[in-house]
Length: 372
Image (cartoon, rainbow, N blue to C red; front, side, top):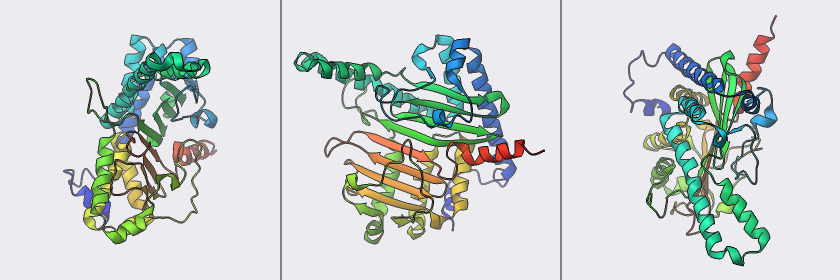
């Protein structure tokens, strides 16, 4: 039995009416319309100079692909910075973000942003303790990083006209980059980058709070279930540093590359359920109908096309590792970064090799709009 069908049985939406294709299409159209309306509302709060800063042409791929995981001092951002917005504009922006992400995705984004305060405080404390002993150039660099680690140092870009129904939204900053593309009532969330540092807050009044924990838990559940033969196929190296290139900015998929690792076709039914739960957790940053459509596309690709590969210690997931999940319409890289005994830092990227940035839909849209 197909693993997505198995997983669907665990949900309460068993009525045939819920499963009708028209309802999926209508649900996504409702989400697309709500996102567009929220974007129009946000734009209406901006002055002319701010609108010029935030608006880009939809075909400006250089700007659409200029997202980064790096701090802004290493990779300057374009668009409109949250720090520059007044209260009315911030309220409208969060209306847009809450409409453009799931409840999980919106909460993750806010938590990731808030962690910047911890990074800044740590650097400021280090400067207070050791600043006078640092060379002037090093001290200036640390001060620059400390200033850039700011929960308001995130940037918004809007491509095209939301009222037209064909446009894109990018939210971008350190450890967070979300690209949502809306084409004729269809919504795609790819690429998406989620990261954190620290993953578990080690001290202070928020000690123990953690981000992206459910992604780790779902992966751990699957890992603990694998037998020796499955692990032999899955694990490419015990050394995290030997992993394939992380699929970050500038990464281009090799669609002809042979799959590596463990085929999902070699998992048991229970393991397929665990895999489905993990994938759903990763893509769940998207709005509900968009995430459901993504899962349906993975199903359509076929179980035999989905593979898993692992680099790092598979017995201790507190140490550095990287997991790659790969299918024609899905690529997830999940990495725990850092050194042994000090790897409290995640990087996650979620991409669609067949339709990153909604490119496939956009080609169809342009082709249809130029038909006489």
